[in-house]
Amino acid sequence: MSIHSPVDQNPTAPLPASSRSATPAAGVVPEFAPPPADRPRKRYAVAGTGHRAGMYVSALTGDHADVGHIVAWLDPNPGRIDWYDAQVRDAGTSDARPPALPRYTPDALERMVAEQQVDVVIVTSPDHTHAALVERALRAGADVVVEKPLTTDAEGCRRITQAVAETGRDVVMTFNYRYAPRNSTLREVIASGRIGTVTGVHFEWALDTVHGADYFRRWHREKKNSGGLLVHKSSHHFDLVNWWLNDVPRRVFASGGLRFYGDVNACERGVGERPERGTDAPGDPFSLDLRSDPRLEGLYLDAEHHDGYRRDLDPFAPGITIEDNMAVLVDYRGGALLTYSLNAHSPWEGYRVTVNGTAGRAELEVVERGFVDLPEDGEAVLDPSATPVPTAGEALRPDGERLIVQRHWERAEEVPIPAGIGGHGGGDAILLMDVFRGDLRLAPDPLRRPAGYLDGVRAVAVGIAANEAMRTGQPVPVGELGLGTDL
Image (cartoon, rainbow, N blue to C red; front, side, top):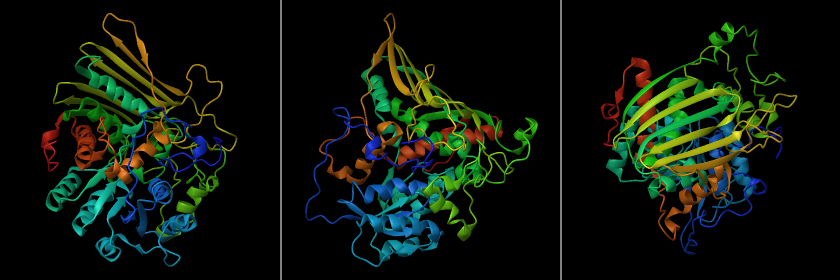
């Protein structure tokens, strides 16, 4: 697959078969029983038909069509529904019905669940809408699969936790990074006691100037929509730390700001006149031309006349209210300390995790894109974590991953990381198995990777507290956020 075309192969979708590991390592892929012949397929509705829906649509029209199928769409934009409806129709996996699946606007969610006898609502809408859609789906009688983050604020957490308590229905969080073998292997190292009791974690995440800039082009650029990167993006990372440590956050302090993107920063650096949007602005490395990828063109450019949403805004335009440089300090109940940083304008993309323990230290380093090798047209793959783009000849920072463990008074040893399948470090395809056929597992997951709503609350709790700490300049006890449940 070329780095140049297309630029967006659905940032959360499993890679095509040609791009997957041909043979995953032994024990990486769980074993599942076949579905009973007389069991009807589950009926799924998709709420939110932007690019994030693609992973689930592909799964239910592909590998998991034997256990579930899509019966309805829910979105205010009919153009995006048209695009996915064509995908389902072309796949030929729906029950016999008229050419288009039933479609509903968000105000009709309850009617959709009733009329289409929906078993599960998959929520892939903008972050600030998650809480209302999850709560309403539960109360309407459906279970929920929800993309990260669970929600963006404490009120949303309260709404969801109360609805779960009152309905007894199920909420599945899709934390795909848990399933990446490199992250699973680090959990195994920690759980084994090899480095003793964990005293502290340092976690550094670097987004490069292609992937990082993308958050500042779209609806995520406004904190009221996304909660900022400490909620939208970092909930993945905070969930990993919670899961690695098997612990919950107690107190959070944070600092951050908008230091690179936005009109003020561009002006201070002497950046001249910028295009209002990336489409039809060729050659600019910070622009995204929606015509460069048929998926982006179909979901956004061709659909924007319905609601006015533009996916390709200039990241140096006015109106950006999220941070691009963030530092967070977290105390855990068990005594461990987390120091975390996120930068959204790095020249390379990847992450480093250092785990210090009473008996030694573990270090995980992942390079997902060693540098951005821009072609002449300025377009590059948006998310190298989902779509690996090896940079040939990069000697100092080659793409790859390495886990090192060093006990006190011993030499460092490299821990082998088994191969996975699919995007996001080999974890996407395995996650989807648990999402759609978890009840058919032949054995429980010893790593406890499947995540529920409480895991989602624990993850966003750090980002919510961090936002409050940045606002007040004070440490924030997580227990005082009013999340509606004891973590």
